[in-house]
Image 1 (tube, rainbow, N blue to C red):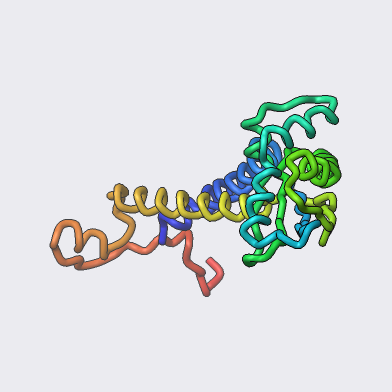
Image 2: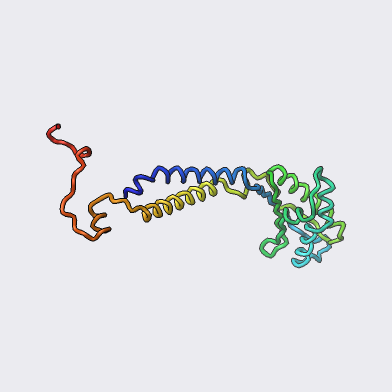
Length: 210
């Protein structure tokens, strides 16, 4: 108990500092990921589009031609590897609805590329003569907060790590501390009985007022 009493302030400071460090890391140290998502329904223009063909048509949305079409309409070009990492296309629930997610470092950029991407989808389908057209089920919106990192989550993780480290440090100090603080410590350390104990008069209350 004495070890805890002597070190609890340090433990509180460490916990708070780790929480602040987690917040700073999430807010300024890690790359932010803003994700804007749109859903598109692919339908046939000649009555021959099956679910399998719709899935094949969805692959066009990550094709080099789609990459070229997007890059031509942006002021700042990016590599195909960045394009492939930025856009996630998946078929939803085995239907002809395609879900496209756009992961960018800023919310404005995520929305801009998402809208540009949707506007170019039909053009790419026509260029490939896929015999399909798209209908937008849900338009992408500008994300208000990054999907990663979560500042609150990192703050909580930092605080938990600070608490654990502080507790571990206090336990280590306690195990290494061989200071005699009570008669029980003497009996335990030297295995001898304690006959008498001197009282610390400075810490006692003198009921006679002396």
